[in-house]
Image: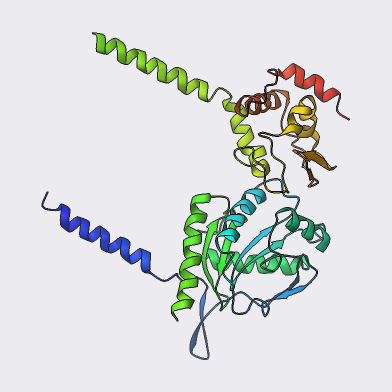
Length: 203
Length: 131
């Protein structure tokens, strides 16, 4: 019985630490001219569902959630979009928040198809961009997002990355990721998004 | 003695209840694996993209054609509860008559579609009539 209180204090202390901790910065560390740097999301330029060009410069000053999908996907995409709709709804009043959904089937998913898809999902076209680009560019950046997100956690070998949603900060660093089909993991992910938004507010 | 008998009765009641709640187990598993990705876990669909199956007029009005939709997919617009849906449905070739019957009976039972129980043989017949 006399251990209960100390145990209680220990548990409280540890859980408190986890709650208030800043998000980790994912990404391979390397040295350039003796300065430690972290691998970031590379420059990009795509076209969104409105036919507008969307580049990393357009998202400057914003944090965003990235994912990869295609409009005719019969498997997990619907569930991920269902969860992303929750995310969009939760942060709809945040001016510095965006979602970037990349099609991995750019040949089929033209601007018109993406527009129709976005309309059907009833999204805010100015905040949620469904983007099309050359296949090899999309695949390269897919690789960049996922490899950065993964290198600190799960082993990449044989691991299905495609269900991930990835949180990117204003410095284009990956700060969190989640299984996009899992409502509980997405709950945790939304807490991370809030933590990141708060991080900028206190700065 | 009475307590023992009562608890046995209770156990029996729980078992019956548990079984009846999952009467269409294979159908449910097939639904979760092949259908819920788009039509969602409770058959509610997703916005204007994927139509609902639960509380929806189209699946009831076209009940006998459902085997064809599952087997061959759908690539034309349909109206469900007054709303037009035009996203293409991919065919699910790997499901045979037994699986299709099971998933249909699961949906019919779970969402109270008030349709007759469908047998694998009836599914086979329906598949012969696909357009």
